[in-house]
Amino acid sequence: MGPLSPPSPLGDSPEPPQSAQSSQLTDILISLRDRVMGVSESVLSTVDGLLVVADADTVHPESVAALAAATLGVSRRIAEQAKVGALREVVARCGSGHVIVLAVGERALLTVMGDDGLDIAAFQRESPATIEELAKVLAADVAY
Image 1: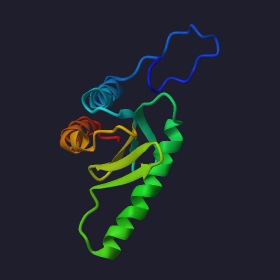
Image 2: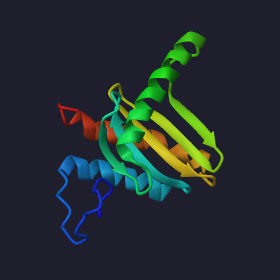
Image 3: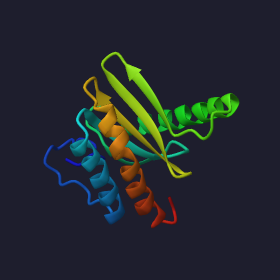
Image 4: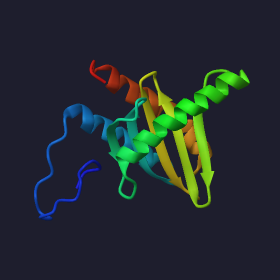
């Protein structure tokens, strides 16, 4: 079953086909998980908190999308008040993992969940290219 597909009540129904753009975006999220040790799930959403795509098994992607929008909004205001420049990312270090919210251009967000072993250095090295790839695919869709 794909990252966005809810469990089928019948268990063997075929999953609905994804659009080419959704498939490209999901592939980028999966690639990030494969390249960075400790990345477990990720959600791409609009800055308004609407789900675009997800590579997630345990979280509710729609809830993560909405909470990421709120997190980014509050964090941008804090950055403005502190006069420390434009916000790049928000990192929450938790008891058994991390949640990182990154802006993807002006209209999208990438939320990445990682376990306690998340390789932060690798993530910081890989995330700019991931953000750029996501932005290119999203820019091809005028409606996003």
